[in-house]
Image 1 (cartoon, rainbow, N blue to C red):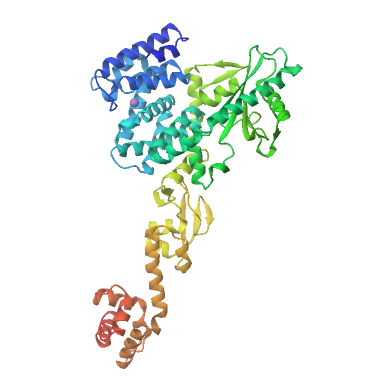
Image 2 (image 1 turned 135 degrees about the vertical axis):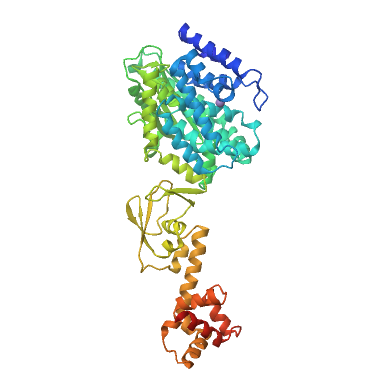
Length: 562
Ligand code: MN
């Protein structure tokens, strides 16, 4: 609680009073209960509120964070009581978080399934529309739970790590909270690939001294150049140059894509943060370009790597100049340039606001709610959530597709429209001619991704083709297809087989000339219904090998065929 009190020291006495009351209430409610880690339970809500306070979140949200587990975990605490003591705004948030926890608890003890995560995500988002600030509480709740994940059984560790990677980390990214996102990614990865994590972390740690040396070298030269620039005199311009090693998780992802460590150019990068001691008459953006100019004057730049997120900010508000400089003394190095205000936004995303170089924090209720509502809308919008489904595809072994009626069809990763057809019905697969994917006519080999709506267009003329074996990926589709192909082959070649000829001669000898009796359909029925065989193939082979007498089979054929 000490750290939290420090973080809110600037807030009004009334606000601090509310937080003290919420803390006292939560402490009394949770009492002596301990977490799995052995710590008193109260450390959890305090940690959650502290994470949010560090992000500059408003006071009602912090109060709700302190109270977030009281109603769910303590029988004697009711929503009515929370509302009476802390008002409807705080109570609505506690209600929301409790509801989301219940949603997740419903399948808590089952194995991880990507479709539950997807379903949770949807319900989460729908519910969060009533009070988007509950997303922030859930995010901080998850972050603290991930920090203390070590005390849970391994199966739960794995499941929580997967969920975090699929849902909470992208959510943090979408809200522009890059520091929370990076921490979530690294924590998840640590549990999902522990050996790789440890090995890579050691390797990356070794880069740090070189990064610090580069930051010092470049900082000194850059400061010299800036000090000599008469245009900047009197601004009290300072640059803080620091080095950073690419996050282990990102490196691991690149390695999974087949890149080696030496091929990743931005393992080490520098960050230049511009500060002015006087209120500057020059806009932050212009200062970034001035500093970039000096940097490019000192070292050669690789223009093809230059990215201007100052002029064109990212969707979540991120602003920075990214350049790659090269030199004998420095090798090849990515440098990011941003102002202090841009830096705050990069770390805290939509929770931060600045006007005329002045940071406004904490962001008040209505303003924060408006921003979260907008972000939420973007996540629910199919296009913006591409990043989410990409991750689902990458990590989950399955893709989630839909029928035009909205029924969900899960398929193994890499499945095509043909797999979709067979998963609905073997007969739909047999006669599949084309697909309509997201409303567009597409061939059967179209690869499917999560979220696609697929309709199969049938044609009675369409028949399984041998090359379909190269298109079908799922076990189910391949098995059915194999059967169907064998059936077709058997039927086509039937007249050439000795067993078939024996039967035909027997029927001719009895005066039956009609081909109708020798149709595949009839023989199949005879084999299956009367003789207990699996298919026509077996029938013909049994005849040929003498295990069945042609006369007996002819009797059966006449019995069924007439
Ligand atoms: Mn909690």
